[in-house]
Length: 235
Image (tube, rainbow, N blue to C red):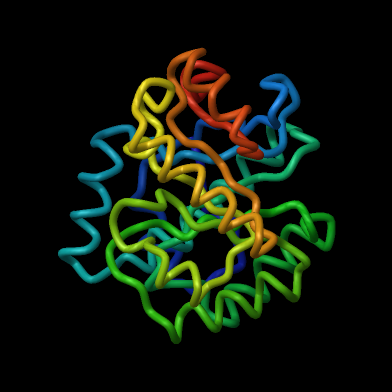
């Protein structure tokens, strides 16, 4: 269980965080050999409801910022406890980010050792805020960390958003990947996307790889990184 009461945060934020009951699991993102871990994605696991139920509840209350703070601080705590040497990928809402005082506290609490070890993964929901993106990108660049666009091909993360954000990493949604080894349309689409993103110096992640045939085909296309049940489940 992740606890927040020891953190030097605003009292109201701490009170709200104290109402959460969540854990974190981690799923590896592999390099193209399928064995070498590039990063670990931290995945929130509420103890009393699903992640989507929790997000929808806080959206209705207009309190998504609480989950943003919980995710950044909670996932980093869990990551440090695991002792992973590779990067950690942490989800972030595209319409929210840490306030300046919270960002300062984050850096002070976790120390400069986190510099260059984080990937901030911009989710595909609920909506994209350009102003929030500017603030978030400043913090990412200041800490020499990376930005990832999650679930490209679904939700709001389309080519227009990619051109605005210019992320370091683009994660291709499972819808683009499933059955690609025998689907000509998907093969053509993903081939074009890989070439396009590589021309912009972006790494490409294939999400949701569940079959050996999918993995082998995507390696042949030059996809950089891989994530999915075929390689490893969250644990």
